[in-house]
Length: 118
Image (tube, rainbow, N blue to C red; front, side):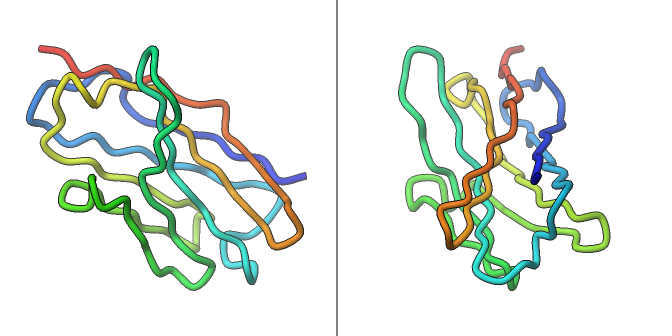
C-alpha cells in the first residue's frame, strides 16, 4: 500500500520561501507512468493544482504559479519536494501531495497546514 506523508514548516513569514517534502512509502517515485503532484486548498476555497513531477523527473507547473514554484525529487530518499517563493498570506492553505498511477491508483497525503503571517 502506497502512503504519502507531507512535512514542512507550519508557519512562514511573508516574502519567505516555503519548502515542503513528501515522503513516499510502499512504492517508488520512479515507477513507470506514475505522476506525483502538489495540490493545495486555501481556507474556504477549492483545490488548486500547483504542479507535478513525472516518473522520470520532469516537472510541470500551474502557469499561474510557475514563476514561484519549483518541484524536485530525491530518488535516494523516495521523496519529492515543493518550494514556493515570495509567499503572501494568500498562500495560506492546506498543502497535499498526491500520487496517480496508470490504473487509477490514487494516493493522497493527509495534508499539512501552511500559514503565512508576520
